[in-house]
Image 1 (cartoon, rainbow, N blue to C red):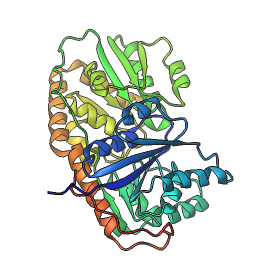
Image 2 (image 1 turned 180 degrees about the vertical axis):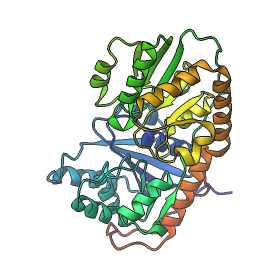
Image 3 (image 1 turned 90 degrees about the horizontal axis):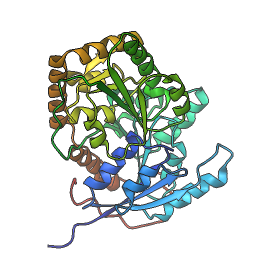
Image 4 (image 1 turned 45 degrees about the vertical axis):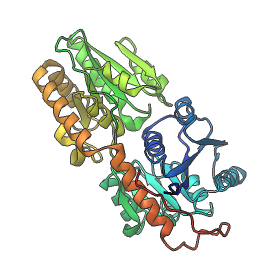
Length: 380
């Protein structure tokens, strides 16, 4: 038997901190390693964890960020960096509709088919911005949404042809069994994980946590992640037993140190951090945003977004009731481990890669002339 054909896929990332988009790309690189030769193009500053995760797994190309609309040289450098990887396909990942928009442009002028994944919904500031983004998204060969809410935004607001959109659920992988949780509060440890930005609602969680402490509850809070709001959040946590753990490299081990996981986000798609906590066997609370209700509500306790009183009440109930914690942990673990895996995410993504590569080329792809590339030999 001959060797399995390999497709060259270039992933484009531009977040200054590690988040869900980066974790999804890391999972795809691992799951598709037999059929995809991956290159990651990232912009400075590159998160330390990103460098560590991709070292030895794939080529990492780093370029300067695009400072703005008038920074034409940086745009051209990004386009050249992507083209120089000689991709068979470019996969651009966006945390929000406007994030990494220059990556969309680089994908379009890469000389190869271009796929984009939008991980979060988000507000668009003006009609001009919506029109420009509609052109960029609409010119992609396919756009992946991680939730139906994101797909609706793509179709209704950015006018992407619905035939070129597809929902692919995020997937999680747990390499070891969930750790049993103690029934003895000593104290009860609540945790949250994500980029330290307003979207994650950590300020709301701190307000709720302060209420619990004022009531005399023996609880601690651990916050994993980095981001531009770190200084403000540390100030808001002054005098409270809150640990800011920074960038979490070993997520599984970090989750094993918690009793309860809380996601207080103002908006989400299909939140990977929440799914990882559910896979770890943690009782989980989450705000009713994005696809949390439709995809995960059977395994989490839902609370309204931006409601610190409601969040405090839910946390109080979960911390006090061992039976509730056991029930949430069991249902959450069963739901995520049976329905949402990195293998199924990779299979769906690889199938889309094949369909896009074999589809007749679109007019905006004016790169070098090249023979038809090999499609991935398996779904991963």
